[in-house]
Image (cartoon, rainbow, N blue to C red):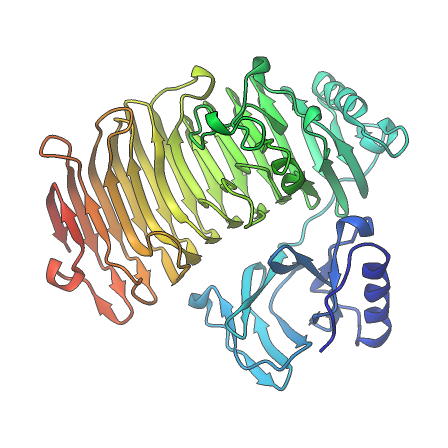
Length: 514
């Protein structure tokens, strides 16, 4: 068996060796993503991968492997493993990708661009993150080059902030070309357009002092302030790597990476978010890869008209509280065609009252995404500190792995209303604390809430989860009222009645099957 790859020069050597011994040919359909500097890319020799005949070095990241590339149209894939392959499964399963296994090699055809999870020997996961082809912007005198602001190889926070401020003031596009940009917290103002080129990495500092908190507030520090530690979003964190605050008309796009260096910060008791969008409007994040936050990856707080599209999100599954996307007291939020691998919730729609910014939440749509998590995948809650949270839709998502697929947790007194789970597909359970496919619950923490008018439509669970689903109100005054299941299937069985479903029920009213 060949050994795993290593960080640094060994990764470069392995990549070079692959290119010399593995068959490579030109392809009009496949474009590899460029590696940047080897200390931030751990190239493994456990897998050798070609897509349409193009060799793509595989990155080992924490407990998974991944490759990011662009793909136009369908393409044949060949994976060679350093040990015999006994089974190989490609998700989303709904796409019907079949594999052929010969010894230590698996072959199949990808239908086109998208987010693909290859499970090998029912154990290891290899993510094939196939972007749609794009046209990068041309560099000219109307474009700001972030590299022109960089001075040396040390921390560049002040220099990059100067570039961002100039981009905001002049409304010129700021391009980060290939390279590594080390920084602490950066603040992005109105009318800022940022493009991260293929091979560009904005890399968070590994020193907690480079992430100042709002107003000097104390964060939930599990190292130096254990007695006051909390994972409640109202008080958990007041720092982040990227802050879009009180801004409008902001765009971050491209094929580069924003890396939060989260494992290092969390070890110092620093729960910094990767991106926080706060009190802002008309914000777009598209195409980039967001990696390794110390806490929540992308917090959308008290903001309007936010779209996150074609974004790849890879968290460290060993770091707690690494949610994916957290719309919080926000409106007109769209999370579309994204990929997220998390230790905590993939999506958690909530109202935290962080910094005292709180209001009713409405009009949040999560669609056409591929998700894996050790916790809840499609979730509303846990913090529910506004009066009303309504018009929330999860539609056409593929949940490859989770502990709870559809989750409503009303803990702080809100009214949940008009929530729809439509055409979502759930493949397998990650055996964490609950192991339930559907878990709706009202609890009393900071108030007594209610849930009403919820629809689960055209959803399919590939297999039953180990424990029964639970739908539980709090008491006779605070119930779950009006739950409709329409064409919901578990395996090959359609749920037509409570006898088919057999959930745990408490303080519920008007459950219907259609």
